[in-house]
Length: 344
Image (cartoon, rainbow, N blue to C red):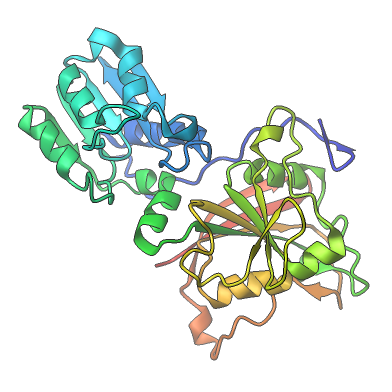
């Protein structure tokens, strides 16, 4: 494939980090598999969450599903349709509590599951939607189905955008930085193409495909005129909406975001990918609106270049500690990707 005019090897979508899997728990592996499968629905499932469901009998998956484009069909309905009558007596693993509210678009999943008569349903996360919020669980138990809720970090991680939006009315925010070893994103002259190599840039394009929207600062837009699309074969249609952090007007095809603290600043987006520059990165970090850091480092030293991040308002060095947990590292050609999750 060709990315930014450079031929690079084929790449798949980046792995979704699913921390906290307790491998000693008998249901952990199946729930982790359901959570990983759920990623196929992100972000096309919006406005619904990307849910994953597996139906298992005699140690084999006989049905699987993830939330489809536009939110329908739901994961449970798809898995039940695949399993058919064999779902009776089996075990269903679903990352989010089956919905308890019917809609014009389809029946409540709790009713569908109850009618299929699995012997057991294992749920990774209770739905915060007040229309369900325990009601789906209660309906399954009332139907005589053994139903367990396990404290599953993998399921919660796969639903991060939906859960944060439900709790804080904002999207899950990933801040991506591509820097030199000394934390620079450009030479002093402003030259920045390219800090990282072709494999890292392809990985960024794959990460973009998981986002509802991608945002840069006004200075970056004016200086670099970035395309911010996905240029991987077969994923071009997954290009996210393009947003710019500015109090002015946005160019055609872009959306202006003036105040990231405003309740309606991000619409219904569940996943926002922030690509910079230093001012935009600092704005999100200062407001404590970053949930994940993806830092791509190239084995180069630039010296007095442009810093990756501006002032984030830290008053003391102590206040910088105990904020971030390192969760993954990956080599991408000569570059290295480190991923950090915000500790909350």
